[in-house]
Image (tube, protein in one colour):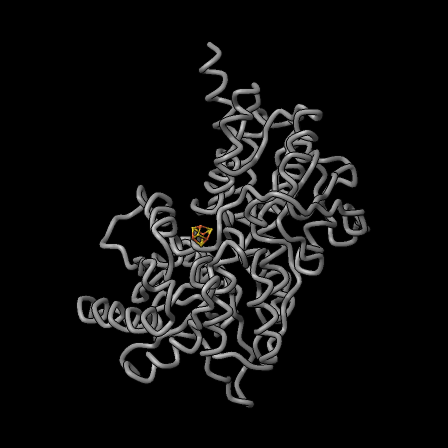
Length: 430
Ligand code: SF4
């Protein structure tokens, strides 16, 4: 299949659907799930994230979020001292005291997450019990939940999965007679969420809700009449819990680039019986804008090879966008976890020459990367400098999570994120 061909619904495709996967288990070079607090605290505007961790955890959050804080942050770390590590009773008392202090100072907070870390897991501090105990004290004004962001349990984007999964437990049940509703699952920038909402309105799909909501009191209902669309590919546990509540997942490519966004919206349109003419009327103009925006940047990327280290779980849909819409040639596409079912529509659109890998063994992967000598490497911050020193052009995968990249209007910005490192290298060489 030509990398730049456009998929039509009748086209039979297999792509990487049935491809063998190289399974790697070894040293990781990935942030832990605490990182998700950086975007989650900005999304749920009345939530507070209290990491129960060490000074290392506090430094990670501060440095990841440092440059992005525009308002008083709604996150903090309850630092566990040696005294806490010695006795659970002390740690629980201290936790109650810190929560009381936070809620007294921040009366606008309506939901507080106790976020577990490596230290809290190592001493087996039961944050679920702590959340139940504290909820009894602060209900109904403040809801206290818990999830883990520890590096033992989670990588990078899996923190969001754990957080949203904890929210699913609190979602009310839909009425049995209620009309079908659409739930969009995964944190999106507000501007992107508004664009999608307008498109669903134009298609005539009513009862659309987003998880997470902007305010904790607006948690949507869920039940057998709920159809949900994943907006992010790293939400395995959240999707499982929604399915357990009776909701049905709509299979779709992830909404990156013009093709991915159209496929994603089409899945909703088909499930809600939207007429093809109405669907085209709603999507034709923004899709054309997205195609024009990416076409302008295609020349800078076409024919260039790209190698993905496993980091954010966005790797498969990104590789699909870059190969199909930008003409890039993905070599290895590594991802921390490959959920075949959720990624099936994207895998089907990947060239069958791609080497898929799951998990990480950083030394072996570095060897393969150096042997491939790709034009661009997408990787975490820790690997970027040594690879740049080797003469390779890198892209930090964390930027792809912090930047709004979903939807038609962001397709040009998404392409730009890959054009810029080549520009920078050209300027440096000049
Ligand atoms: Fe490090 Fe674990 Fe804290 Fe993450 S949770 S910053 S991996 S100690």
